[in-house]
Length: 110
Image (cartoon, rainbow, N blue to C red):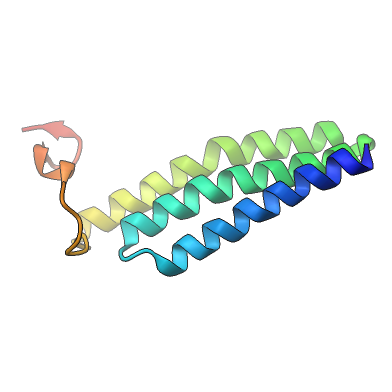
């Protein structure tokens, strides 16, 4: 079980590293939020589950924590992105499509 837990934890750490690299390299807030959310959600989930596999006594607690991260991380990043857009943070110049222009007051159809 230690080998499986170590592999799962290692994959999670790799996703966390790639998410951090994406946050450093991407051009604007919205792209960085996406990289940070997708990679860190999966990375944290796998890392926590890997620790739960290596320590079977902690597995159910680790699973509960991992599920909490799986639910709350995308919701919080959505709230941050929405607040950034409402406060006037613009997209980078390379962005081609802006779907938020289709909405009046960010959520109600125009």
